[in-house]
Amino acid sequence: MERVIKFRGKRIDNGEWVTGHYSEGSPSHHYITNPDGSVWVVNPETISQFTERVDKEGKEIYGGDIIRYSWSRGKTKSGECIAAVVWNDLYGYYHLSINETVVNDFAVLNYMKRNGIVIGKVFSNPELLK
Image 1: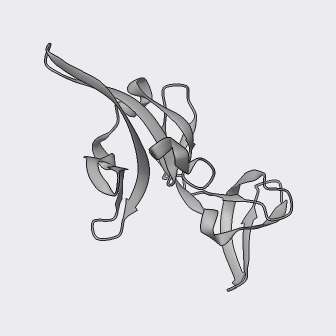
Image 2: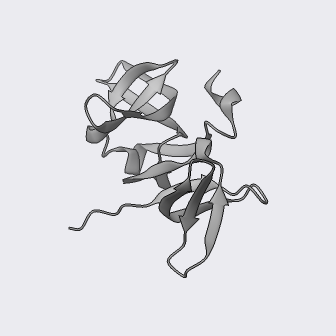
């Protein structure tokens, strides 16, 4: 299976989120290029990479997404969490973070496909993390 490498960024001209190949033309110009050849200038603070995971609705999960997921531990403990998807530079993988504390190693969260949903983006909806 081939790895899918693509990025997402928020367009500077109209605020729309776009996905595709990322490139930096200069420190002040960052671009997302769509496979059809469209090129957009994007806000560099919003650029994030696709994690190669999808939520239970089939929506692609990117770094900077906010996820709501349920969990259970045996028959007596269960709950719901809201966490940010964050890149870990030290270990080289995505993880879920609540208040900057790692709650799960994202590399093993394959159950997100049946148990989690993207509810927003850190860049657009920071209030969801409060």
